[in-house]
Image (cartoon, rainbow, N blue to C red; front, side, top):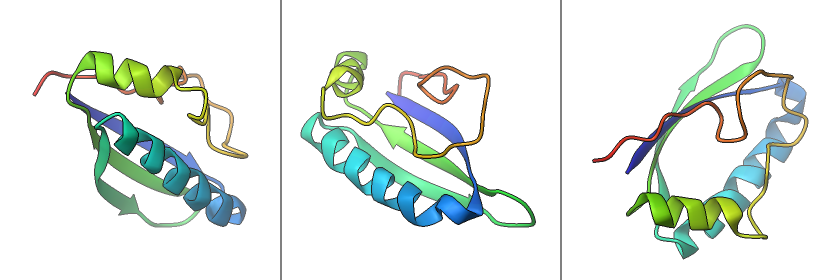
Length: 93
């Protein structure tokens, strides 16, 4: 299963976001998932990244998402209208 997530982070919160990202990746690994690629779209304004995440199955991804250690949303993320899965549409790979 592959998930593509577009993340927007305020520049003044980058250190907190990267700590969140490391914690999330460690918990993902426990469920067989991984952040395979990070594409940084640097420019003026907020910091933006595209994450390509893989999981061995939808069940493994669900286990990560429901793990009580799993962070629910990045710290101080700008308001957005997408669901907690960052608006990513999972696909089978």
